Length: 225
Image (cartoon, rainbow, N blue to C red; front, side, top):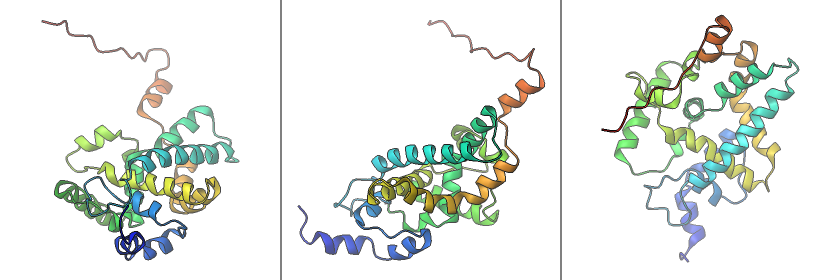
């Protein structure tokens, strides 16, 4: 219902051909790419919805693809190791860091000053540490990272890493191979690093150290006044 929709799409995606070259995928329907990079605050885009539906899809696609890859690894990881590997590789924190490493943030469209401040700070931190991804850091939960004084992980960056996966999945006629071709190249160093030395969750380490005595109990409920 928007006049000159194609012209508007080209205008909103000005410069995105560089991003397509960078990730190694050329979109057939570029409106998927625009949607994947659009935050709810970005009102100039009246052509597509924001990224949230594509993020939901991309999250499921990446979860499956990474799980399949880990399961087929010739090292034949144990069930516990598979769980720890997937937890270390499939989480918003590592996705946000990879989004910065591959410059997703440069094409993220939003008009939120608060979000802009958090993203700029996170990008600066990533540049300063050389985009290094350590297993200890990425075993932290999202809440733990957000509560940290030194690191505040903008969830939106991890979300667009997933939403672009969803966009590629739909644009490629639901080809899992097309998505994995793009994302394995971006994630290969961390997949190999963690697969060589599987990061254990703190709970699993405690259980292995004291299997007989380790106990976990729910916090007691405070009675209503």
